[in-house]
Image 1: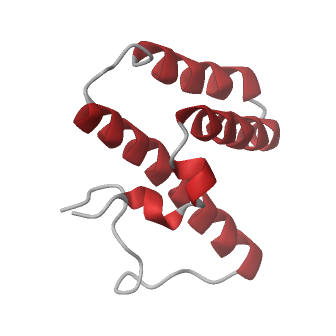
Image 2: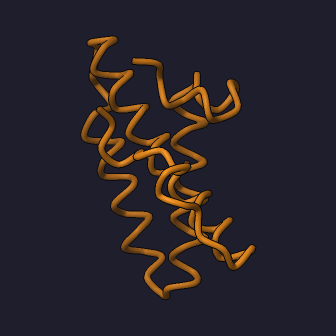
Image 3: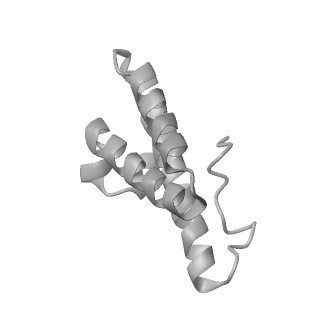
Length: 99
C-alpha cells in the first residue's frame, strides 16, 4: 500500500521534525478556534515524545502515516467548511481506516 504521506509536500512528509511542527501548528489553530489550545498541543507533544526513540523503519513509517492522515483529514474538513460543500462518500478516500 502506498504511503499516505504522498498527499503532503515531500519536504514535510519525509522529515519527522517538520511533520511534528505542522501537527503543532494545526493543533494551535484548532485549539484557538475551539478554546482548548493547551490540551491539543499537549496531546500532539505526548504522541511524538512517546515514539521519539523508535528505530524500526516500518513502525516509523506507520507513525508518520498516522500523523499525515490527521493532517489530511483536517485539510479536508477545512476545505468543506470554506466551500460549504461536503465531499461525497464515493470520492472521499477513507483515511481513518485504510484497507
